[in-house]
Image (cartoon, rainbow, N blue to C red; front, side, top):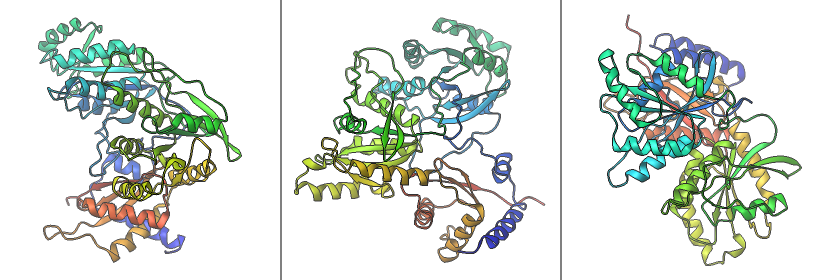
Length: 482
């Protein structure tokens, strides 16, 4: 690897070469070291959270972009991974808040109840206030009515946005939405910006100054989520770590609450464990046990920096185990996989478990693995070194010079394959943020998903990154027209 002076010279040369290409404002901000809100962690302030909800094709994403004042930033560009909720930092009239876009609703006729609940309830449960977007030119639909019932149950402040009102003629369409019972509908054209100022003023009136749901990761004890499917031993493990029996929160009828925190001393230092038992299940949801287990898991992960995913080693791995691991990755949190109930596993089970790990968790070979027994406390002391390794990787930042020197050597030894007679060239790369590490690569053409995975694999081999997801975004830029 070249020395630091050589890295700096390489960086200056590559930056100079970028002047020949068309760059956008957020590209320039990124190149000047300005974090565009890609970093989900860090900072002691928990900003109020505003969720934008509504059925498909009502203009949610257009409204989000209008509020942001710029085109929606690409925060994660990994093939095959869809994030249903993406957070962006936003500001209006000097007040900052977190804007949550709930794009990606795919509501089918057969599963409409489950789909609406699954997408909307998570966003609403983790928000301080909600903007409900309705297409004023269409009026209310059955889906809209279901979302209204969900919003009423949540008890959250709701601002009703009557979108696609492009002129005075559409005001009457907006007025009809009073019938929803959510208060005054604000006529807006998200596409043209008409009425968005009044809408944002109304939002600030209901958005609290201090968030009850925003995620702040202040200095101090690191925050750990203990997650996993039901009956894998989460409560037993927490009791063992705490050294006392915790109070069990019963799944009685009621509204959603925040996960509770538990201060635990491990390895000579304090840790905050984010427990998932604080969110209750509604009694009338007879078939929703899996959904509410997922909701509890998501809330815990979002409040944490690192997650210990418990897997029952004594029984076959399930789809739900894999889904919990994927939730941690999608949330951008550091990860440790703990195989619990190791004392209950017989020799016949072991080869099956190894095969399941190879098949089901092949994408997370980078995560530290600890074999434990929550019942006896066996190997519980090994959790701390694993947590520390994962968090160190999660916080790692690579200098731009080192990163580009690494990529230069990599591309020279293993160039991108030709596609249609053309070969995309990597112009420059930078690390946009940590927690988790996110990289942005400027290129002259699209990089194949396989080549991007190859870059990620080599990044891990060279710089470690044990226990943290990493994201690689690609920005294709063309030469300036003379």
